Image (tube, rainbow, N blue to C red; front, side):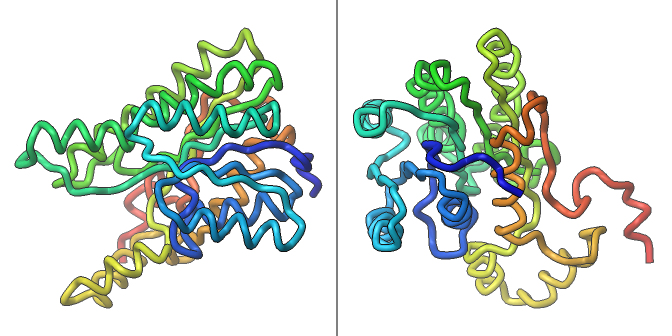
Length: 263
């Protein structure tokens, strides 16, 4: 299916993670569709990824950015729009489940909010004039933790709950501009970071089996490729009448009846 993303400038944050991470996978899928990935991230891997894309004849840009710094976000979006003159879609993909719980300091809690939620607001704020010009759209990457809680991660849970609130608020605000805004909810996805976390646990293999058993559809983890495919469809005109939605790409983990898990 042609998603009509060729030559679309797609600004994506948090996309310079390790190879195989959700953000990096989205970038690769965008490139395969002929879109122009505009990556905002604090990690220097972004320079390498863009060089690799350009070596394949794919246009892309990386702006090294600390998304907790409002000035850096504004400067990076200016750099992107100075080069391309437009933004067709924004994918807010930053997310660090940082363990900032009730025992954390005020400063740590506020930093978590800045990273995981306030950055979404600032990116959209500065990209908005260009989204209005292109009748573009916004996709926020959320987490099950914003709906279910997890324990021990107040900052991340509050942020991801807030991201869902912003998604519906922006969908309402921007109807007059024909700008859609949706969120992807991720639960258990097999990423390099997830693999690294499992390996830190004394009983990692047992823990992983326990989690996988609780995923109703096929009893397996969601792949980053499956998330990327849903993201691209959602920002494309193939999803032209979808706005204000929380789309769970999780094998039914969050929303299906718990009785499915009864052995």
